[in-house]
Amino acid sequence: MTGRRRPGHTDAVNRYLLDNRRPEAGERFAALAEMFDPWTFRHLDDLGLGEGWRCWEVGAGGVSVPRGLAERVGAGGRVLATDIDVSWAEPAAGGALEVRRHDVLRDPPPAETFDLVHARLVLVHLKDRAAAMRVMTDALRPGGWLVIEDGDPALQPLACPDERGPDEELANRLRARMRQLMAERGADLAYGRTLPRLLRESDLTDVGAEAYFPVASRACAVLEAATLQHVRDQLLAAELATPEEIETHLANLAHGGLDLMLAPMITAWGRKPA
Image (tube, rainbow, N blue to C red):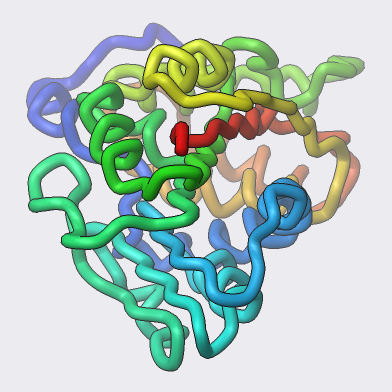
């Protein structure tokens, strides 16, 4: 593979690579929920999330996090789940949960403040991450918590750290090329590690962070296959992979013999001073 670009490739450089309108998005959301929801809610529960809280879920994507928030805040609380595409989250709307189409960088912020503002795997993809974080920080009530969760692919760029044969080598090669597409569309592949500093620079207190590496789970393979199918056309158009490479890797994933690992999910939190 030469990595050469065909004419017209740059026309799509600024588009979000993992478009929620693609059918593979549902599989991706389900796999992300299986791997990361227990991790996410462990941290939110530790911060005291419960009855009566008012929460803003930014870039909600699928239903699992908005639904989990709504279950915890109860009838006396409120959850606002927003995204530029709410088609996957809308089925969960009702009761304490409102689902609203909203672009955190372009639309006016909600006309209310929150006990919790949370975003998972959102900011890393945005063109102006600093502006989005300012919007979310400004939406906190005094004493409210901002929780940002994002990956850091540059910390662990491999699909198979145990590269013992050609199947693992192919997995690592395709993972690197998918990450290349993300970077070309504006994703910061080293963003996760900066979150504690960015929260402190936003004048938040009680800042902390932890990282989680999913390893060799069934959901890792499901997510890898769905993501590869999602970006297949872009990989081929950019001459970053051949159809044979993609089909071989999908077959290897289906066989179940790869010990896949994801980039670390870094969860960082901070509180707005009372």
